[in-house]
Picture 1: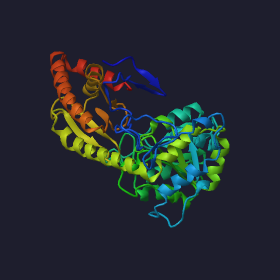
Picture 2: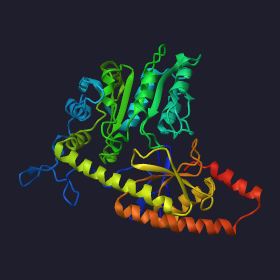
Picture 3: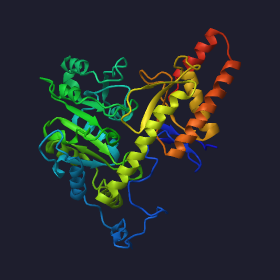
Picture 4: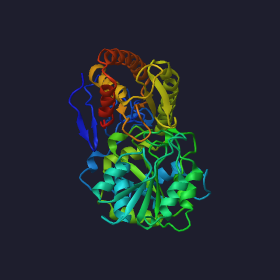
Length: 421
């Protein structure tokens, strides 16, 4: 049912043949946050009644795009100027826009770190691109894990200890993911502030808010960069806005850091179609579509939280529920203990036999036996729940018939723990 895996960055994703349910990449299952007609086609320069349809200026594609993107940046600022965390306003001078958040991650490394000398600090389990970009740029990583005994909370005391240590001078960036990936929980504002207030460290705190629009209202700290010159808040249109295909990310920060990042980026990095689609998505009519899709996702998220624990073999939800995915344990038997062997078998069988793709996360710190499940549409969630129950039953029966001695079982668990999927 599933074609050969395709490699995307450092991930291996199953290829969709049009019938599969992809709950692995945290995409927006309800589609783009754009008020399109039912066929979903974009017709250049047409109108429908008194409402102008979305336009992309195809005739202007012979010209290089605007290198400054002031209109797009102002719309992003308008979205985040909520005055929840500051009375100040953000402006285009506070923004860097790039090819997804990944370009901002890389630009920050190139701006602040010397290859082979400087370091960054990350808090695993967390988004894998911080480590990938660090490796590409020959930057070492200092790790301060999330507190697995306190629902994957940030540990600012331990982070500040590292920043005060002999290594602290060489740590230039602290990457914090909020809501976390794969943990799906918000970082406390007070914990971020504790790092920002370090008395001697002179680096930059980078807050990755890719999933912030699935969290409670006014959770974003983007406007807070107006108060903290060493804070960068990254966001993207790939998740809640359902525009992963246009690859548009933003970094809110002080004018000084924004200017540095903009001077480092490739010329004309945001194409005309990308810019025009992003500008359209930030108009009132299309924001209403995004909010409607978000509400549907939150409804299905609540449904998964309620229904998955009823499936024999599903354990606890770990982390939080502030994103469009959930992190959940798979057990070695109903009411048993978390098992990477069973979780990996369920992941593979769901994808290869049932056409339902999730993400195995059992190799990451504190995530033994865990799958990360993106929240899908109502129909997708129904099918997922049905297939999960059936596959778990099959895996348990197969596991029971193939049971060996204790050493053999332990070896199978060790082998599964060595797999990154």
